[in-house]
Image 1 (cartoon, rainbow, N blue to C red):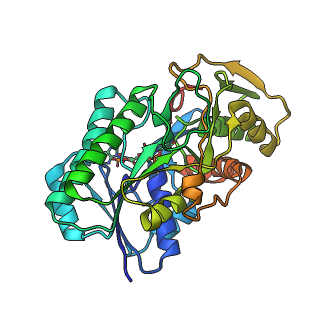
Image 2: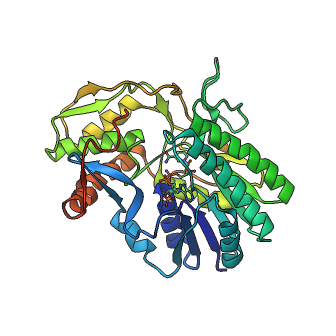
Length: 356
Ligand SMILES: NC(=O)c1ccc[n+]([C@@H]2O[C@H](COP(=O)([O-])OP(=O)(O)OC[C@H]3O[C@@H](n4cnc5c(N)ncnc54)[C@H](OP(=O)(O)O)[C@@H]3O)[C@@H](O)[C@H]2O)c1
């Protein structure tokens, strides 16, 4: 059977891994990706730093090769543009929809609301009014919806109370609730994937592993002094390889129960110090590496990891260790970014925001 899959946010970090994984796993699958930007066959939509310059984040060559097929198409459509979405849905007639278009943490609150809340509303309304009948609609949510409640400790199960701690998490939680109401009203088969902390080649340096990975790779390449800029690394998170996230979303599309949320995570708790130590060891740097302190972010949740039994009950198990994922981040900088930075147009400057 040929499945037609609509992926929003398709040129983003997880969208690329998902589209490539689907094409590789299902030889008959046909994918239409949506995003605002024009088609970019060889870069993500964000930038990365390298040696003091900033460049469009190159797509790892394996993803470029897998996505270069007539079974993959891309169309620029803003997720908040209801009529354009409805037209697209009528034309493409998706069997499965995976919604990953989003504004991310640190984006302005107005954009977070418009994209994350307005986007879910526009997408579900477009599906309802266009008469499309997808088998499943997977909405990408976030493990950050659990937030922090006094006296409560992780692991967080899907039935746990949610107390988002920042505007991004609040919009993801609001989108879940609005999505639930609209899905019930329109009899739409919606499943939520509460994604925790993906790691992988090409990730945005707004996330800890990308931020630290780039610096370790730069030190190894002799492009910066042997000191890592980092804030306090005392929080814990639940890291999962981007390739495993892709498979988990595919499993949810096939076997997720409509109306149900699933944690997409490894179930392992890892501290920021451990991430840095693993990167330093993988990068062959002397340990401990010198540190330059940066101020912490406000509103950070101290500990977070998931109870993954609901997703495991669908038969999903992560295939990649955290060490694999961090090695992929380092290789990405040492091979892919280093290569591209010598040929691509770059901008000099402090890089992509010193946060950690
Ligand atoms: N990465 C993480 O750490 C993480 C953790 C938990 C949950 N998640 C969730 O996973 C999903 C994917 O995240 P990601 O890391 O892949 O983010 P990403 O790399 O920023 O990808 C998101 C994509 O959404 C597109 N987009 C943004 N605004 C849009 C709009 N108004 N209309 C259409 N497309 C729009 C962007 O492409 P254009 O610029 O082309 O529009 C971007 O490529 C999101 O729902 C996110 O909340 C991610």
